[in-house]
Image (cartoon, rainbow, N blue to C red; front, top):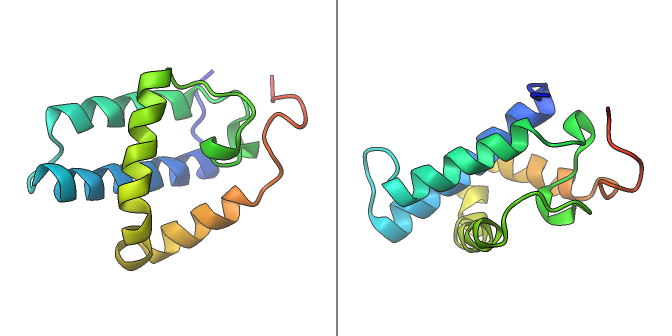
Length: 114
């Protein structure tokens, strides 16, 4: 099942913006993502497309089902720690919506959409 509703599309934009900010800041990339960040981006997009909670999902950090591999999850944490504070200045609407999504009821509190 591939998710492509408005909630998933917004989450994809948010994650992509965070990875781009991180790559620019840490790797000096100016034209696109470096290969390491491109791999992380592609992995995150794939995981979002296959999220069992679909449009009902909260942020991944608050989810009861961690579908990221441990090494990728650690990489995303580093990205978010670096890019998160910058998001409010670079992408304020995405940042505020992400904060609000994080306040949603924890995914997994009810069963995922089949």
